[in-house]
Amino acid sequence: MLARAAQSTRLPLAACPDSVLARDLRAAVDLPLFVNSQMDGYAVRSAAVAEASPDAPARLRVVGAVHAGDGPGPGVDDDEACKIMTGAPVPEGADCVVPVEDTSPDPDDDSAVLVRAPRARGEFVRSPGDDVRTGDVVIPAGVQLRARHLAAAASLGESALDVRPRPRVGVVATGSELVAPGRPLGPGQIWESNSLTLTAALKACGCEVTATLTSGDDRDEFTAALDSAVSDADLVVTVGAVSMGDAEVVRQVLEGRDGARFAPIAMQPGGPQGMSTWRDTPVVCLPGNPVSALVSFVVLLRPVILEAVGRSPVQPVRARLSRDVTSPAGKVQFLRAALGPDSGAGIPVAEPVSGPGSHLVASMARADVLVEIPADVTSLAAGTEVEAIPL
Image 1 (tube, rainbow, N blue to C red):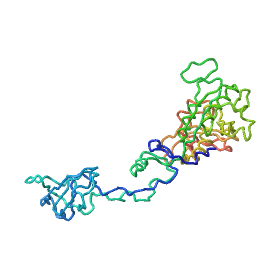
Image 2 (cartoon, rainbow, N blue to C red):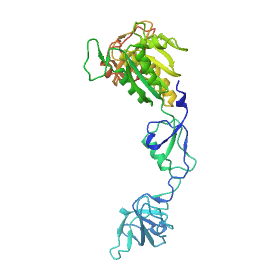
Image 3 (cartoon, one colour):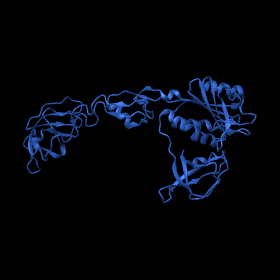
Image 4 (cartoon, rainbow, N blue to C red):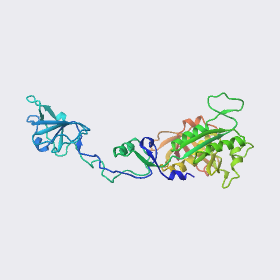
């Protein structure tokens, strides 16, 4: 359904956040790139400060200073020190850095420094390979890229990465009764929420939503919406008009096509679903009631999209019901619930937030999980351990 998502595309780092890495990123260089200072202080030979103490400081002549971005600076001999800043290259001859707080100016000679603590070879010095070595896998394929991954890639000199393409998805919500939020309603009309809901849900799965359209129940209008939606999409998701009524325009236009399937599913909410194609683009058809649409997406479509783009699946959690619940026989019910505090047994409590009705969209805002009740179960008692799908 989303064959393009299995391929890869190369994007500049700035465009990569939240994308999935398609191939292992291996270090082309050692990091750090050169021997440099971990602290502000003085680069010295460890042997020169081996006996240093607060009461008997080692006196060293300062031969220069080196800052981050400079060349290595002057070499350091046994009785010498080079002032150095964090990230600056360590001068030849020095094998450690004395932090500035362990030093003080020589009151008798402003060209010298007093070192008041010993330091061993390698202390406060960063060496090539301390972080990664050439050939190391720094970011494995399949990782969803975050800021920390992009920082690592940039530090290796990478300007772009091979990532899984974001599936391009068009959304078409149907219904002559639908009105855009913020506009006045006429008799029998409702504010349309499905296109916004699915757009947000698709983006959260890593998709690029290329079209968000609404259509009335006229066949020509819906056909035009489909034509527009598929023009730059790998997948189109429609919402509504898939049942058996007189104005089921999605079903009427798409059902007769090769491979099309429209059928009720034994789930609540959810009911009728459909799959078809339009101009060689797959079309997934969800029911129109807002709760049914979102639950159908979470249960049926989200797992497919996450697998296609290489993202980790959403793992169910265990919870205990806060109260008795009932469920219709012969249907899997997905009960909307909010997770509460731990029940005392290491498992959170699931508090149902509404009834089974597919129109109860406002109350669904309080839910953060779907409690799955099997088709052969008609009631569950408070305290029963259940499986819940995070929303």
